[in-house]
Image (tube, rainbow, N blue to C red; front, top):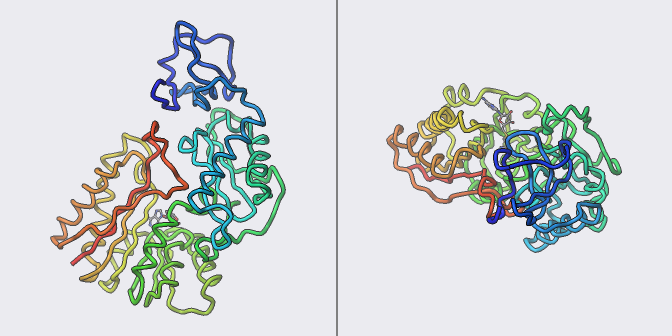
Length: 379
Ligand code: SAH
């Protein structure tokens, strides 16, 4: 705690005064009675998620203050109040010293997810604080915690607007338009965390034949189109993702026939495809959600990447990612190394990629690092 890690494990608690309910604000003291932290009480291996290391009241003013800090940070990194980009993460949990809370902004609508009962309890104050702290730039707050709250809490939570309401669901990322399906889409409806990596991809797209594997909403595909790709093929096993991708391509490049999308399993597609792609993106879902699954996950990454190395055109460029938190940068690099060695090709690392600045890592909470990627030149 003296090193400001935001979690207190249940085994570290000697005794509890009173009978706190899950989600309640509690104060933590040392044995000799000095204050350590104030945070949300949880039932489980993490007993307290720390909000503050100063003794503060956790009230409406507190949320406004913390949300203002989050807005100021986005302003200082050039993400707040831009006309060519109104899509960004406003709150990244522990990374913004707000453990258990995620807020993504799409234009005038914020999509908020609580991962803890404490954040759920304060959802109305937090929603009001988002509107106040953004000076009204955000008018609507959609609450989407049906699947993120601990199921045992049994809060009967339904997704829906808790402030305002809007059907206007086109967001702008680096001047490109995207339909955001916050109702039915994965997470908050869009993967905001690939924004910078998509921009980098755009720079490499000119004249290339691009395969965007695991395309979801087609983020990388739309950037590749703007970057001047010769052709772009998007693949995802979900038919719904293919619809989303086709819609986003049509929204930005109506009538442009360089793009095609296929609803197919990644491994099947990679096995059957020819060797014509010279720019391949592999951005799979998290292969390991828990530490126990790590070994299997590393095998999965190696197997997937091996297929790309086998088929990519000489002189091709591979963008490969892992968003599993338990897979470290080194683990991932070793898995990709294994795949490269298997193919016997000469491979160089051009870029090492990570999550963008609006997904900051609290220096006291290294677990917050999750997205990593490599850009490789394959001779
Ligand atoms: N690259 C995307 C995010 C990918 S999310 C972006 O920039 O937004 C992972 C996607 O992989 C999901 O859309 C999911 O439907 C898809 N997926 C999961 N398993 C798959 C498989 N075996 N084959 C193809 N796609 C798969």
